[in-house]
Length: 252
Image 1 (cartoon, one colour):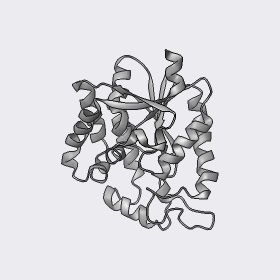
Image 2 (cartoon, helix red, strand yellow):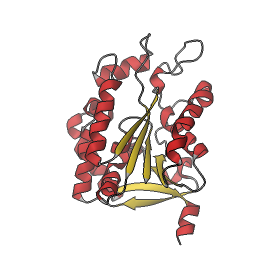
Image 3 (cartoon, one colour):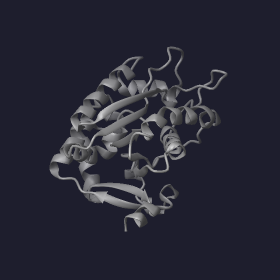
């Protein structure tokens, strides 16, 4: 059994949709566990949250629709969705009620409150899943989104010793980081590429399209989504993943 871990409700489809589809087509059970899936609080929202809500166009309770979008995308890929029920960074607050991230959640330092509270909450939610799956895929945290950073850290802390850990490239953030080989994010890791045929590529595209509320925020012009995905897959030669060097040595 294989577990893919997503910080948000579209990350695996965006980054790994082709591989997930290929695995399930071979009869391999795949679970996609998403960390940030809880409904937002009803009190005043941060500027970051207000901006995202405006982009999504789903009203003041957008995660009700976003969870349905995820279920549809997972069904297209043949995977089982699991929603861990934690809050997105744009909603999280300090004990005094102040937003942890008032303006942006990308390219900023993870708040100390998150390192203390959110990290342990993610780990606790993941532990039962991690112990039931032999292979685990988690984000490299390319792009510096605090939820991606925390998700990677939680997986690395809670992963059972016997489990195989593989990292995926966070799309579309990776498009803007061409020199990934030189990034500290991949220290001690080596890449491998999974080639996608047209059916796998189409499955990835159709899964991404299920998240209709997110297309403008992710791609700018939603009509360009397919072209952007295909361009990157062509540049890479498929979907690229990263694995600890020691894992390659064990396979030799």
